[in-house]
Image 1 (tube, rainbow, N blue to C red):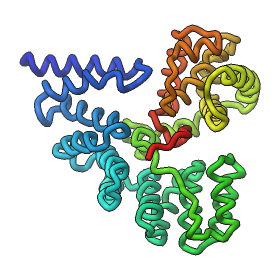
Image 2 (image 1 turned 45 degrees about the vertical axis):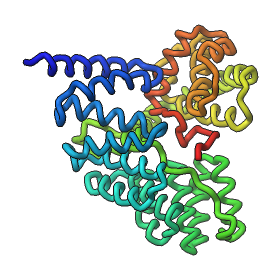
Image 3 (image 1 turned 90 degrees about the vertical axis):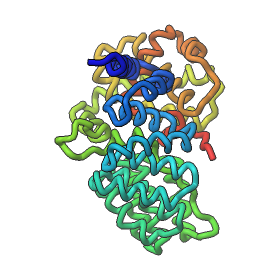
Image 4 (image 1 turned 45 degrees about the horizontal axis):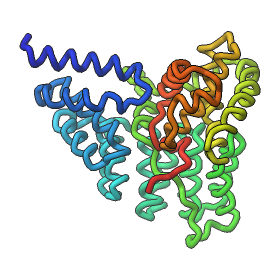
Length: 355
């Protein structure tokens, strides 16, 4: 085997090892750029590097991310994840018709993916004003992942804009019985006013690609099993009594620590929401639930909001407010980031929307 290929394979192993342990996936960007330079065009290592560069840069530099995605498509034209990445790039760049076309390509390879259907329908409804055309896609997404409050809100919005107010209220009411949010309350108020066009309720932009791609691989033979499907299965297998026992303790520690951090009320509310989404993992992985573990988990939850919202605080500053070591926070945050597939600007928890 020749030296350049050996070097590329070793670089890939190093990147995979780092990605599995890094607090911030962006830590591997220099290695990925290096791998993209040394790997042969079209090789597995080249595709691996360009795919990860596209995904990691999609939020901070969508134009460059699109270039990397196109390089992958030259060799893997049927890869739904690459098309979804390119679609999100075009969404962020304001090229909505291109984004719609790219989501159609993604769905051609993964027709059962509810997150692709959601983002396609959401673009048609909100960005292009084609609510009637959006309904089949949003209904498909809603039927495929009705547990998601975000999908329910998008579907209800399109129903209302298409004149189906009663059904829109029914969809939103079912979602709010499971869990209510600020967005749901604002959307309900808009619906109760008759969904006036001049006061259109602003919905968040589509979810990040990492979350979509990991969430909805429904083909059992696909090695990339759906993260959200796995989370729902875990929720079903974990007794509610275990979660109930941990939540009050975690809430108390979290509230005390957050009081010492320069976060606003919305960010504190998102931290509580994130803690509830994470409770399944930590109930399972930390059965002993010692005080030290709860404090470290609370610190990790707080830092997750710092990470998502780009708050200028260091891990040591957050750790000090919870009286835990930086190493403990870093370890628990690494678990949390992997478990919830967190990204900077994550639409589920971010409060500072970037234009």
